[in-house]
Amino acid sequence: MSFPVRRALPGATRTLATAASSAPVPAASTSSSASAPHRPRLDALRADNRSIDDFLSSSKPQQERVVFSKSKQPRLPSYLKTSVPTSASFNKIKQDLRGLNLHTVCEEARCPNIGQCWGGDKGDATATIMLMGDTCTRGCRFCAIKTSNKPPPLDVHEPENTAEAISRWGVGYIVMTSVDRDDIADGGAAHFAETIRKLKQKAPHILVEALTGDFLGMQSSVALVAQSGLDVYAHNMETVESRTPYVRDPRAKFRQSLDVLRMAKEAKPGLITKTSLMLGVGEEDEEVLETLKELRKVNVDVVTFGQYMRPTKRHMKVHSYVTPEKFAHWARVAEEMGFLYVASGPLVRSSFKANELLRSAAGKRLLKGLGRTEKGVEMVGENGERKVLEGVLAA
Image (cartoon, rainbow, N blue to C red):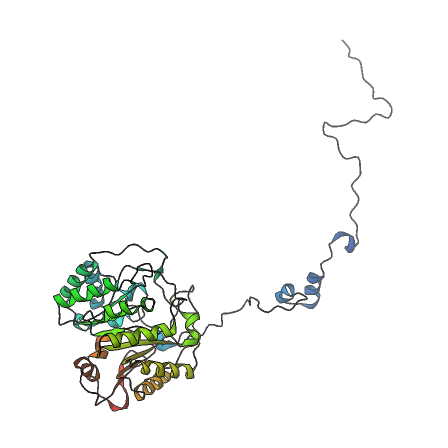
């Protein structure tokens, strides 16, 4: 059986199911101008061995530009480096605080001195107890404490529980502070004052320092805390007037803080008032001197100077690291201006070893309300050691 043979017709072409383009693909050109796009910057980079900055440049001058280089942030000096606390005393105090359900600003604000303040005997330890929660309604650029416009409500049992816990802890000096609570009508002054009163009722021998906020400048709130039975009323100026808008929350005013210290003294004549200044945030020497003059006008008794240290990379950068010699200079200047007690050093904080400062010879005279016959000025050195200037003996 044979099959018929099919022959292709003349001129016919065989095609696939998917038709190919009828236009032929042009051959690659050997000319560089036809095969490669025109890239003048890349060509210039290859020809002149230019850097990446030539790519980023433009015809218009740029005012600010990211520089791909090492940070110009000043390096941390050796005298500001602290070791990780590991002493048995430190761990014991930390366990005590957790067992008593007490919260400290030492931990919340990541204070670099926590090992020194908690590292000694319990009777010599200084802890700053934080009241009214751990969330602040303000957002200062130097502070590591959590912030919120609507923090949790106050614990109505906190005054009683805190007073009971501190009285059982066995310390001789305690610093109480709090977050700012602008969401409360009196700024939390009544809560603060009640805690102090209850503590004094349970343990009248314990010396109490209250480090308060500005209560938005409300005189009634300041007076309520000042008359609660405390021994030292502290409110921190933090920095000079020109730097205040860049360092502190917009609601914190330089003059408002001065008024708080003045109102505290007026509410309870003879009350010890105290403040603290951070250095290294861009202040000028003349501004520091002017701030000290303003503090003397409102009869502030105690002033401390310390180096600002950046808590995290999200916070304000350090402008400069102030030398120990400069801190010694400000200690002498403040003493000559009439401050009854001065603590000045790179690692000094508002409550840094506060019990030592006020248990010195000058501090005892302050607390007893005696006349000022001798001056006490303490300088904290590079390794945390205490140095008394001009031959004044320390306790």
